[in-house]
Length: 375
Image (tube, rainbow, N blue to C red; front, top):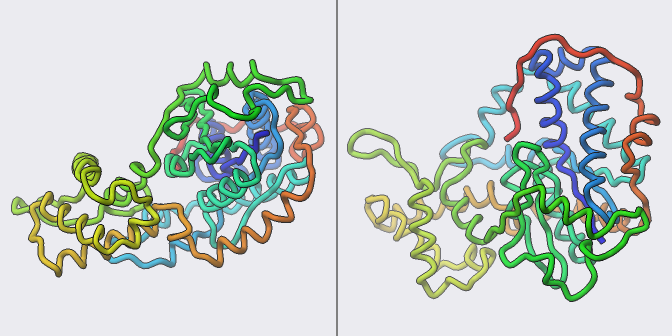
């Protein structure tokens, strides 16, 4: 069986980016009338139903919604988390997130699970849910275009977690290294004929229509901590100024070199969780990085490097080592009861549309001006 986890933030922003191509960027303007709001949500429902109907054997569907992130209260010494996005929040997003919340609650009435938690970003929720679901024996397909979520893919026994970007222009299924639909000890979504009538052929058709990309999650996280995340205003681990006066940092090329050197060390088989608390490894990576950057390799700079490394890891790595324990416990406390309820999510477009509060007819917005808040 398969559980689908929806990145609500991605789904809404992707659709709104297309929808606002006929109007203004500010949601307070675009969604100012009932007609335009109805039209927008109908587009969300249409795209969602289309995606879900490409996947057979769906056990449950979870819709995750962003809340104000705990990361915004985590102070780092080199920048402010998502500072650029904060500056753009003069835009009226109130109506946008209000509609998203209403949509999540509507889906609950249609057999979906709606997940939102104060302090948790959608990434946190998807990571927690995916790991709990795979423990229950389901495969997981997370629908999102957020590359940060590639780090949740994994194989555990006979089950796996994959991330599907269902954007028609960037249609990709990201899976763990070693993933194969043919390598399975027990029946899976590839050979079960669900009651709905969809089966093996449906998902094989999906796979043939998208690019399947295998990734090494450890390598991804290892390098991401070093390079940071520009779109979230998380700089590379060791910003410095060159003699020429130009600012420099650990970019992709140097991160690749550090990874290659790491693979020659005694710690190469340790997990990221183990490396996170291994003082000898931290001393090594600080020293080798400083020398590669042509910075003075002394204890003062190593301690500074390790501080920056900790800050970056806390912000960009989805892990029990970084996400606050009380937040994980709060989400977990809601997961247990949700999984005990047997629901059959409605995936038929007509049924989702006709009974929704947004079924009324509305006119199209006026101008063309797409925006790119979500990447």
